Length: 307
Length: 265
Image 1 (cartoon, rainbow over the protein chains, first blue to last red):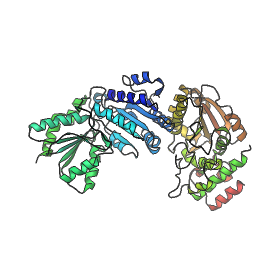
Image 2: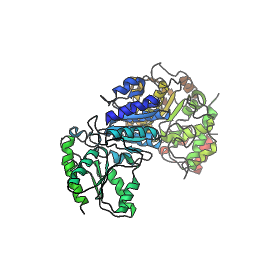
Image 3: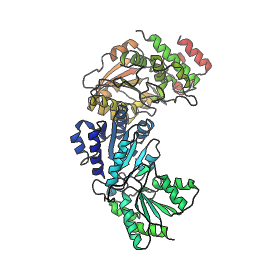
Image 4: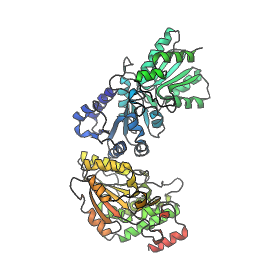
């Protein structure tokens, strides 16, 4: 997703001289091409995240559109208050781009995991939150983030190893889900890098005679509340799925809508438990441990969607 | 132009706002008055009728709780009619920390300490990028210099040789729970900034002539950001508020307002 993001941003920057990238010394093997093409438009502020976000706000106050790039915890959590006050309160075109969503940096440990970022970012007024599910969605989210006037957060996953799930470029609209599969037995609302597993689990399920719908939600805030309400009204069993804590992410967002809808349906949040993954492990290992690999997901979904 | 009467008018406005709004932070506002008067009436290239002019000098009140002084100075300079100040701190009115867009001329929203200098660094970088000649002034509190983000910004500004950036420290020696010397000694303060690549000058922050002379020499050293360490007195100009920490919190009652205004005649 990172390569897709930077390719897309480079194209945008060719047409829009206001686009600047700020990094607290991250972006090795990602930002070089941008730097080489636009030497004056990449600012490495050193390993100083608060200052990076603050100066991004200062640049934005002078007419720039600023992308701040780092690893998720260091672009959302370390400078959280600068994001809140300098960026969101002032409602400026500063776009935070976090690499390594969820358990992408598995073996590096919890300092580099991001399981709380969606919750933090979605709680901020004026903030738009993107969580692309594959490199194609990453490109669409990057384009959308440039088109909207205010603050944004884009949660990316890997460099170039993320599976491409979409067969063609889908119709992307802010606040709208993208439907990938259709089936009457239940629905999966997935955001981010588990999109591939969601589709794979659905395929396993179809062998068992369970046919469900898959909706990708690259736009987390605004969320597609119409979709949630429609499923609730239909009484369709559904789950949310994300590589994020079950607290604060799309699971929480969907729960809020469902709880206030007045409708009842079978619902479950699937995500990471409320704990740090202290044991070392690759992303695949940790996904399996937390039941987020395709086979475990298929089992969970089968029991949830059982009539 | 003698700015003594201007400084007195700004002080009177501050006293009235703090009283009518029952706001805190009057002491911290009073210590900055001469600095603001000097900047807004002599040093900065600004036009109150064109507050968004891209070539204007910028000012950021990084010690956002001192916004009483900023708002009063902006009104005095003609950015907006002074009667707007009566909405300060009141229900539905103007918030008690500097808020952009609530009044013309307020360049940045502040209130959480340590945010203004990074924003100023961004503005100064933008000026260099766009080959514009405006300068960015950032006023920080002394206690605010405890914040790590101030030094992140200071280090980058020195590294990037931002000689269009000026930090001013309102060094009134009192922070929220005690003397700076006792809470977290800042000394040697000039040497700290200098070691971060800045050119530093110290001045009596209430001496209008000295401030004017110093601001006339900006940048102090080509290729370096400048810092003015302004020695000030918290609560300056109102005898019973001077050097008294409680005026970081208290607001004057009607009688105290009268006494203060009497002193400022």
